Length: 313
Image (cartoon, rainbow, N blue to C red; front, side):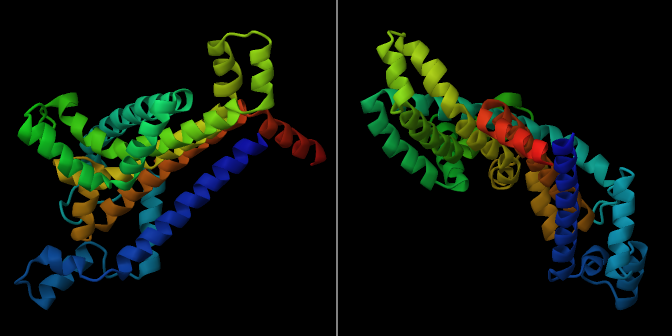
């Protein structure tokens, strides 16, 4: 119960601090949202009317407290650009982003774990993994997106270059591959290093000398002991995907949260930017919390240390 309370308190404080930081950053950014909404030919009086109608003439602390009060009641406010509720604008876009993140996570887990295991048990596979994973980690997602579009969409014509939501899952394959490439390469490196470290341990040699099958030794003594580190890196990779969708969604024309965030920042639509940013922070917190719980369940040393602290308290 103490661990749950600490985790919940930390999550709430993180969300609060993030909202304050984002709100202040938007307020300090150049440009006038009221002037943008009123139009290029608007007079000072017309701009003042727009500023008052949207509450932009209030002091900064009052604007934040008003937004926070509505947020606590499930109301993220009204979009300054579209004059609609933020929730209604985000609802159809969340599904696109979640589908992209889910498919990307599957590619990362399959590609990263498979390549890492192959590199750990096979010497030729290890050499190939060293070269390919180094290239994969070094290639940014926007460069990977450009290359994938050029090869699979323009040259081969296998997959669509622009995902407009009509192609369904097929239209998300290239964006998911572009987003997964660097994370899968990094995970493969971690998996290989962790497995090789465990394969060199004394208890693994003893298990082999007892006549246990190589598959049983690998599963029970190598993979199981390397699981905590692999789980941590996998969780961090998945947690960073939502923020990583910003570039990929722009490149492939996906109408998700990432591309909508870029549009909202350009138009200084503060309510939309706050809502999307906090959703990203919340997703990161949930993912890392689940990863931490899995790490505790897989590593008996952490459970033992936690029990010792509780007894001392």
